[in-house]
Length: 197
Image 1 (tube, helix red, strand yellow):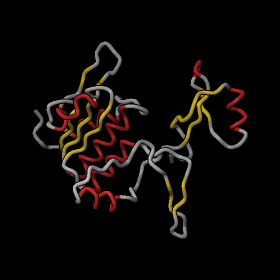
Image 2 (spheres, rainbow, N blue to C red; image 1 turned 45 degrees about the vertical axis):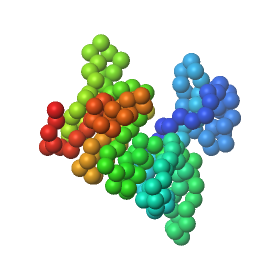
Image 3 (tube, rainbow, N blue to C red; image 1 turned 30 degrees about the vertical axis):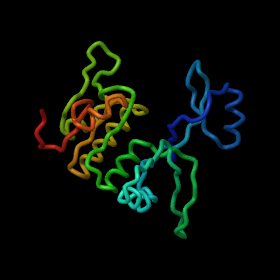
Image 4 (spheres, rainbow, N blue to C red; image 1 turned 90 degrees about the horizontal axis):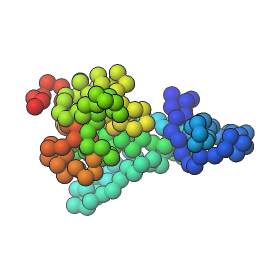
C-alpha cells in the first residue's frame, strides 16, 4: 500500500514551479506550506533483511556491526527471483525491529532525540511514558498518540519486536542509551502480562 500513497519526504524544498517540472517527469511532490514543495517517496514496511546471514556471521565472530542505516537499500523480488532496486525509503526503526528479531537480540533499543515517548506531546498535559506493557503501548499507537513521521514508527517497531520475541524494547535518547540498555531510562516496553513497575 505504501507505493500507492508515498509519504516520506526526501531532498530539498523547491518552489511550486520547480516541483511542477519534476512532477511532469513522474516524480511526486507534496506541499509543505511556506517552506515549499518536497519530493515524497514510498516508505514500505520491510519484509526481510537480505544481509542477515553475513551480519550474523560477523556478530558471532565478535565484530561490532553497523547495519540497517536509515533508508536502507530497498529492493523488490522480480518474478524470476532477481532483485530490483526501487525508489523508496525503508523505515529505519521497522528495519531495526526486523533485524533484532532475525538476530534474536536480547533487547531492542531505539535511539531518538527525546528521552521518552510522550502522550500529548507538545501540550500542557504531556506525560512521558516510562514502563508499560506492549498491549498498552499498542493502544496508544492505534489511538494516534504518536506522530506518523516521528515517534509512530519507533513505537510500532518496539511493539513488533516485543510481540515477536517476548523480550524488552526501549525508546530513549542517544544520551541515555546506556541507562536505557539497563532499563533505567526511556520508555521501556515489556511483554503483555510481564510485571510492570
